[in-house]
Image (cartoon, rainbow, N blue to C red; front, side, top):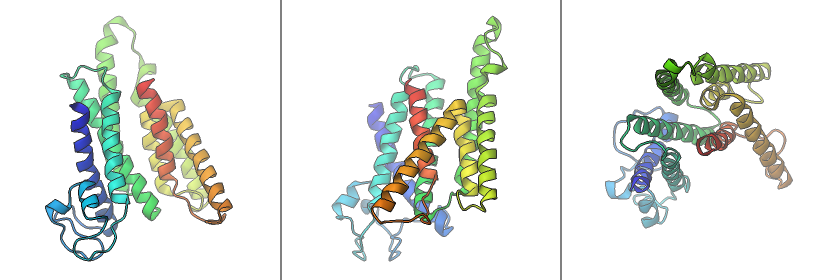
Length: 263
């Protein structure tokens, strides 16, 4: 039941993520009804059901009959699968405990934020900074809460020290990665990577700490190199072709975070 509930909520938040990406790009408010990005016709509620409406309408807008991108149902399904994955990762915590719900909300929130960032960067080669601020704020609060929990449990036995503080080491890893990426970004006038990538690795390092952030960057860079070589060999790009780096960093992050969660 938990997995089913999370899957349904994931589909709903996936639909919201699609709308958020478009509204962030066009600088629109979150208020108002959903509309077709091509003809601007208002979308009826029964045409706005995640995945199902896309299949029912055969991937076309009811008003203008122009194609709807496959990105919309893919993002909705990825969000739903991610929410289920987050729920499965914390099954060791008591279902009725505050720890369970705070942890579940945080990881689902982080999946949402990073998926929006990945999609936005993939489409527009830009990272929406407001999503980074949300992710950073929630991550700092969550790591501080986990440290407080650990300190509260182990302080009497003397088994907890500042060396165990996840927030401290997470910030150290994130700031270190941020410094390196800032030098690369500014030193190459954002030709190799953007300023937003530096802030992104700060967020990722805060969560997976050290050496997790190193592995995440290595995996993301490796996948990016393979992708670039493959595209060049297929004559679909050249050495000047831009490749969005944020989705690759986020992929590496989730592989590392998944090993930490399930390891």
